[in-house]
Image (cartoon, rainbow, N blue to C red; front, side):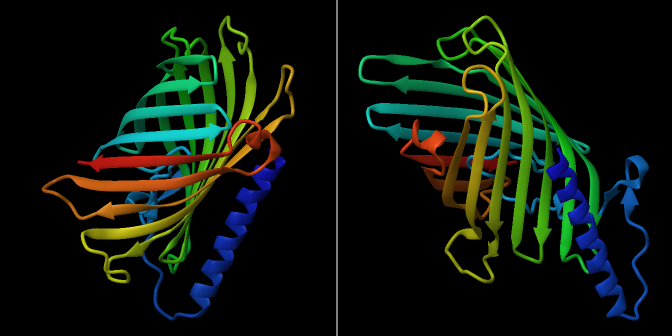
Length: 294
């Protein structure tokens, strides 16, 4: 928690320094106050309201979805004879600043002699921005918010426990291209299976670099976004307390030109283990995503 608070303080100090540089370099008047929301914590100028942040492949989405979005995704991973597949269908829509998300996964886990499959926990999520800081020249733009996720079990072979995951997120934009989306969560399982009462610290980072069509003229593509992601978890109790598992993903997202009123997008990433905990379960994988914004 101390590291998170230090990061927030560092972000605030950096933005204030950027403001001072911008003010020193201009004689023009500062734009009228754009603050709003609880305790004037939010800023109308933020890129958070401009659909600027790309949809991640491994890390939780933290953006605002004013128009509504449907996503179909998959994650295939292998390690020797073990194969794991997760196919998801999800939808999200914002009501004001509150974004609601519903995700339904289907999982299949197979080994040499064993196969388990079925519908996984149905995830319900709500997220809300609390504080934004935008420098005068717009170079530095950060949004801090909170998330609550609930996983509802369906009593299948892969879904036995209820899961609660409170989270915090930060969406950072630097300049015209670079983005960093960060999310930190504390997961607790409730149920009668062997994993009941398991507590896990979850974290993820998505680094993106958005290249518009004016700078890279790919046919039918509005934006090309190379992405590097880190997604990890650390078990906090039970037999494997302290065990960490960290995955990486190197890929891209294509935001395509609209088809009527629908904005399609495609994502593809190569997944690989970073530490020993991840290598024990996964040697490589492929993540895919198809999004439709309305």
